[in-house]
Amino acid sequence: MRHLLLATRNSHKTREFAEILGADFAVRDLSGDPEAPVIEETGSTFAENAILKAVALSKQFAEVVVADDSGLEVDVLQGAPGVYSARYAGPGATDDENIARLLSELRKFADNRSFTARFRCLLALARRGEVIDTFQGVIEGTIVDPPRGNTGFGYDPVFQPADFTQTFAELPSAEKNRISHRARAIRSLRGKLLI
Ligand code: ITT
Image (cartoon, rainbow, N blue to C red; front, top):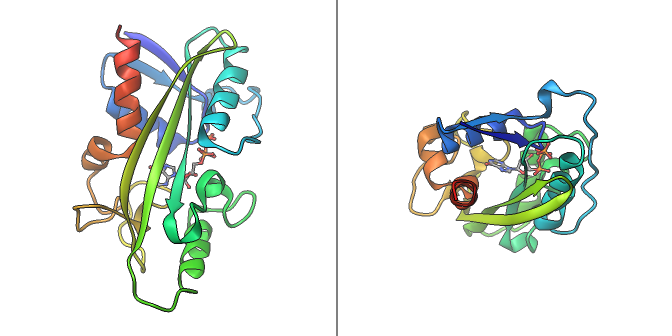
């Protein structure tokens, strides 16, 4: 059994990590450590933010630390919300508020085009304050309006992966966790951890 500390307070991410990594890994996050520092995401890329989180937390904890920085990039919005995905509608915004802001931006385009987008996930692996490696996963798709489905989190109800007719929030979690940006990044990470 390998132990991993996830530098996240997002329990949805933690659940997906546990499902994707499987029984060889014991995963815990920061929910049990309220005194762990909150790291400000001041980077301009997912990689910078993932590294900031992983390095800072790995100075405080003995285990191998993995940080996930991820988000949605919409082409017609020049890649927004991108690194601001969690706070697109403002600091502390809920998922529903972020989706509402996204759809209101897209409704400004009067035509009925399909809006291409992708989810991107960057993982940083660190130990004792040093980055060991980073891993990336991407999934392409389109934005749907109105939102559909109620599984998952974040922008899942408005993201329909390419070659699927359901959104991430309509697909069973096992299917999302087979094809997602996070699944792709975690599979590369897993390979490194098992060496
Ligand atoms: P931590 O920093 O504590 O890990 P966070 O939720 O703030 O948690 P990020 O800064 O990486 O994490 O922001 C990621 C946001 O991107 C997340 O809040 C969602 O809005 C969106 N997102 C990322 N992955 C997603 C997924 O699989 N499905 C839907 N939305 C996702």
